[in-house]
Image (cartoon, rainbow, N blue to C red):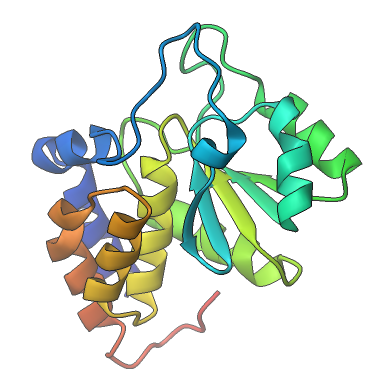
Length: 193
C-alpha cells in the first residue's frame, strides 16, 4: 500500500499536476497587499468539521475560537514569501486560545504519503470540533485532506464537489484520488493511522 501511495502521490508532483496545484481557488480571489481580507471571506467551509483558508495571522485566532475550531493545521512552509507570519507565532496564539496546532508544510515538491499520514494522525488526535487548515491560498490544505479522504474510501466525486463548493477546483487531481480510493478497497497489511 505504501508503494502504491508513493506512486500515486508522485503524480501530484508531476509538472502537469504541480501546475494544477498552483492554481488559485476558482471562487476566492487574492487581495492586493494593501487590502484587508475579512475573516468571513477567508475561512471556507468544506464540511461541518473542516474549513480551509489562505494565510492566517495571529489576528485571525479570535475568529477561529468563535467558530469553535479545535485544531489548526498549517500546510505552508515558513519563509515562502516576504512578510509571511511565522508558524511559531500563529501556533503560540492558537495554543494560548486553547486550540491545538500542527505544522505540516507542503513545499513545491508536492504532496507525499508523509503529508497525508501526518494529516490523518492530526485529525485522529484532534478534539471533536471543527478543524481549520491553511496555506498560501488554501489549495494545498484542501488537497492534503482530499488525498487522505480518498485513501480511506471517501467517494472522489464527493471530495471534488465539497472542494468546488468551497471555491477550489481540484478536478485535475481526480485520477490520483481515484487510484487512492480504489486502493482503499484492497485488504491492508498494515493498520491505518
